[in-house]
Amino acid sequence: MPSLPAKNRAEDPEMNVEPLPASAVEVLTHALRRRILSGDFRPGEFLRDVKMCEEHSTSRHTFRTAAQVLVTQGLLRQIPNRGFVVPEFGPDDIVDITRVRGAIEGEAIRLIVLTGVIPSQALEAIDVMHRSTLSSDRSLLVAADRDFHRAVIASSGSPRLKRTYSDLEGEIELLLAQRQDFYSTAEEMAEEHERLINSLRSRHYDTARDAFQEHWEDLQIKLLDQR
Image (tube, rainbow, N blue to C red):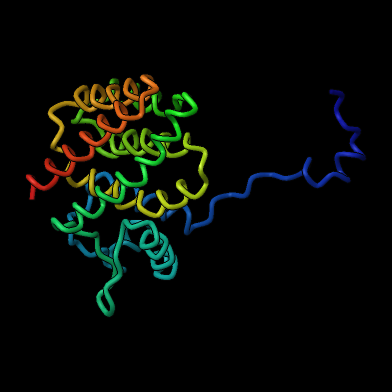
């Protein structure tokens, strides 16, 4: 396709759109998110305004705005008159999070088995697990687990399942980051998720459902054992 003349390019606003630079809030939100999921802060630890502003060379307003974004993602909680704190998950939280995740993912599995489409992003996430070690950046493996299950949900083709799952995703990531020691090796993590892919390839709903059900229940048991 021939390029547009200079005059036409100037008249076409879509040809002149440049990506907007990230705002200070977006940059800080990303930095704090990475620190939280990397285990820089203990469960129950408060992120103090003055300390965070000093460490990230930012204003109190920017910090509080970024922290509010992380509250909506489930990575922080706001305590009135006390500030922002990293959530500490109790047994009831663990059971509730894993149960709701299973309910959402179970419907996605049914739809994937019908279409037979194996999400390529899930396979890429398994490759990351194979190349990683538990001693590497913890957030890398947590992100790979997130990307695997996010791809399963996305492959369902249901925008409502995706929207519902996204509301829970931050808490899932944080829970796994805080309790990642239940895997002996990163390779074990990769092999377990490969079994889930193989169950989807079977195109048999009961086989896939049972494999994912075992994954959910095993995860819940291991998470509770670490309490």
